[in-house]
Image 1 (cartoon, one colour):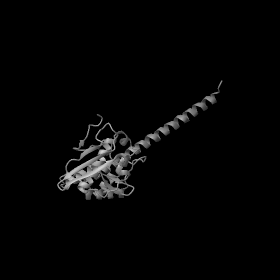
Image 2: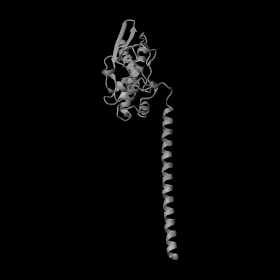
Image 3: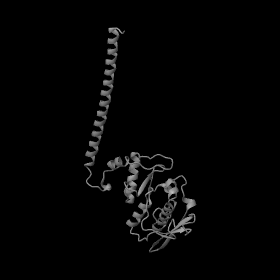
Image 4: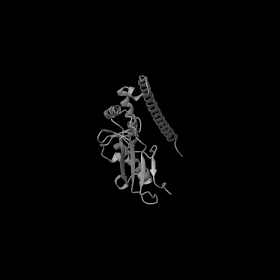
Length: 239
């Protein structure tokens, strides 16, 4: 049989444990309330700062605010690399270059390479720059090599016509394929068409003609990238 003293001791220990649990629970709740309050105050400050914006035109956004926005946007990393965010000074460099180009830093027209701190223009951006420059370019005309789609893909030739004459570029699969890229593995035809059209556009418009292909140039386009108004010569793929 247990003594009354033993029972009182057990009750005391139980009460002590219960009190400690209550204190831990109260501390956790207090921490959550403090965190929620801090987030609410931060959001309120952001809203107050955005009240200074008089237009949705990104060029009209005050530079410090623009930089604050850009540092919150993740950029997709290269192969086997995590996504990355810009430092404030990189965001300013990016915004200044986009302002010079006339392309939006919030679009898929440009991306920032943190390895050399350069702003790169995508195929979509180069098309827009060509339109802004008033260049009268034809849609890209693509020819598969070989024409027979049942044969292994070797290359795609692209021709773009302008008032001064045609520009031509042939993209060979062996030169452009990114072996470790899932998109290249699943859609080699599409990606090679994109490369041929992009490089041909460089020569036809003069935009990015001096660019040297690098890893970012090889694999930046997302899987959903599409080519506008393209004519492909040859048998339909898959037939």
